[in-house]
Length: 78
Image: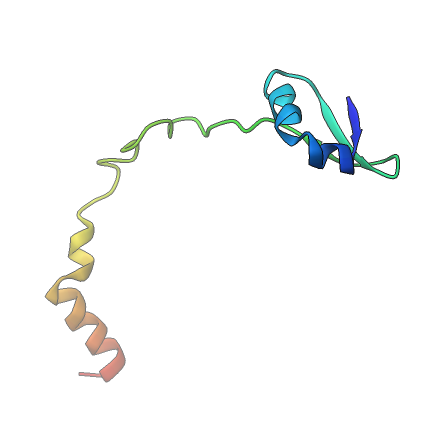
């Protein structure tokens, strides 16, 4: 379906529901197609909280005293 920009503004929730249901929705300005609404798709593997748990090493090491000493050595020449 193609709708004019003003109609899209006034009926956005209806158009979103139609898009999620699989209908193609084109928004036009003065009869010229401008945008196409498409449903969002979740990235595979990231569908729940904690999906990346255990994927990385101990990140707290980056904030320890040895890391601070290394940064100080780089910037202070110590």
